[in-house]
Length: 99
Image (cartoon, rainbow, N blue to C red; front, side):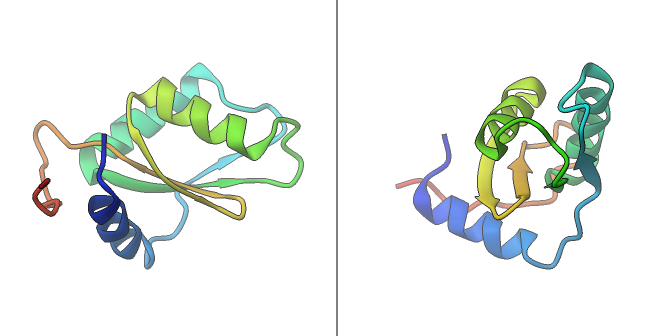
């Protein structure tokens, strides 16, 4: 689990990122989860946009994305989800130390 300080740090890191995935009418599916996992391995931090035509609640979508990719939900703001997962081979983000 991420601490409040770590979440704040990740939110500031994600601020300038553009969403690289969109969840639309079809909702969250396996193919999408595979692509997001690959992106998380490369980037560690990704933004995902939930489109207006999505039929599921945005909280449900955010939780499904985090669970399906085994990542941490950093933030759900408006219709944008921010996910973090420490990379095995491409570690770039140095989180503040837990206390």
